[in-house]
Image 1 (cartoon, rainbow, N blue to C red):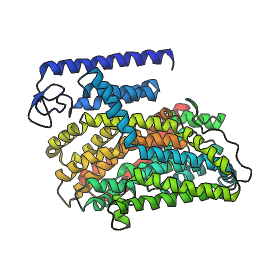
Image 2: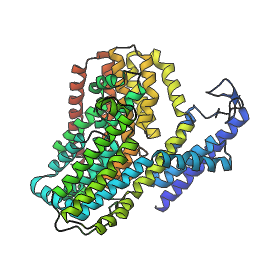
Image 3: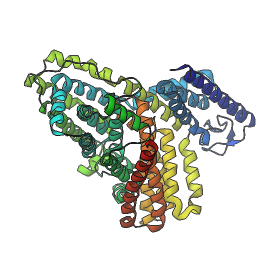
Image 4: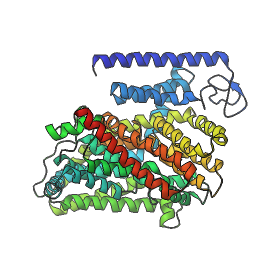
Length: 551
């Protein structure tokens, strides 16, 4: 970190803590803030019910993630920024008690984050080991050589990555890491920057899962909607999910038009002209291994197919164990944090057996890949731990109460503008908290309550909620999907965030316009084609502006 960044960080921390202390002292002195859980009055802790009164359920509950995101974007240092966000949340939650703050950081922040994300951590390590095995067996090298001969251009490499991301629609975590592992040799050979690869992975993870009826995301949405209506509402909302659909249009159009803008342009130019796939930040590469000379393309294809089949089987099996009665119901009932580690472990054993039988690696070499795979995933696990801890802290402070009251109180006056407003609120909440599931968990009950049943506005409102949740999740540096897209592309995390932000914001702006229009038109056959045309036209305008600036 440079001297100026260190000074900026120090000043920012001092100002933040000063504001927090001022708020705590002021609220403690006034003691007149209503507690959202009862009718008692209190300071930071309600004297009637013991709940957090002055901060819980107010706009101050969004302060910790705002601090963390702001510091991360300013300093380009993600670990300390996330920790300071957790610290500020712990100060507010503990009424500025020293021991209470430490307890909140350890128990409510880090320990709960590790325990809640343990299944995903295991799956990350399993995938890291599988990638190390494939590299050691020579499958990645063989696939890269095949790709050089058969995929002739950068556009072909980008579109092939996009297509694979669309095909792996079952789960976003699985999508991020699998697509990155398979396509890195291809995109590297065509000089596609790691930032661009991570953007394509991210753009085909959550947005694709949000429009796939058979996915972990469909299951999550079904759980928050009224009983018996979840999957039906999800499917009806797909055509109006402008952010997800237009993101796919945006990626394809951008690849075919062969240009970039914003920070991504520098990264792509540097990759094409200098062969530098990173441009800035540390290089996030797996441990170096000497690949087997006997590796073939199917030594990559077979493990990936085994992984996909095992993970789908495991997700369905876990869904049946949790009460699913048929295939669709099992997906709606499954738990990805349990099913994915199941599938990863089964596939890992089968892949080791396959490679030993093939004679490309020995048992000893396969065991050497275990620590290598774990080491490759340590940065993603650390960031995910801190980000999850920050989300837990935001939940303790009751951000959902503030957003829920805000939406419920203004619903009647907004009318046909409501879908666009819901989209904005979902974007902001998902960006600040880093969770799309938590966002639509808060907003779906409100949406189903404020719109008439079986109305077109209900479907549009549901789509706006889901689209906004995906948009904020796509942009947020503390989102687990964003973190794992960086891990999948082996890209510096903040490089990925900064380069994809202009692209995501462009699609978000177009989606907002479309939700404004759809609130009045309420006809998907008019709105969706109009959105596609508007997306392509916007890219043409941006391309002309970029060319003019260069000239």
